[in-house]
Image 1: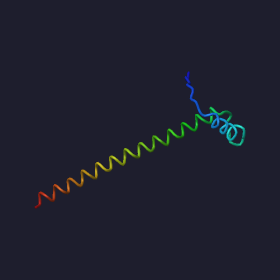
Image 2: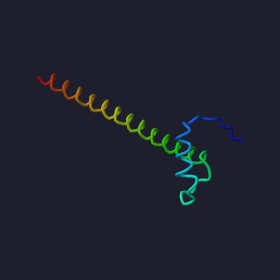
Image 3: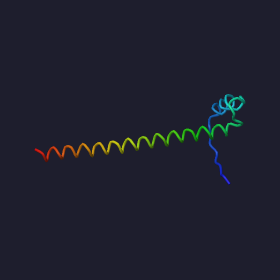
Image 4: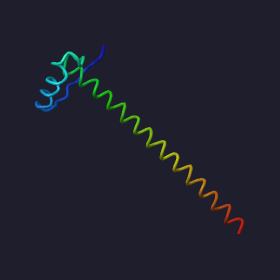
Length: 79
């Protein structure tokens, strides 16, 4: 069974979500909680993707630095 916890949002945000998302059946959400869960999951996916990209960039930089050091050492050895 899934356990839940509660989060607090400002009342104005809660009202805005309810008015914009829940009270308009075209949007497809039946509650503020349903919308909030999906919004949080989507943002978490975005953050995970950003973190993976940052790690990939760091790895690329490390490889480039290694190649540059290799080139410098090769040139020094040739002198």
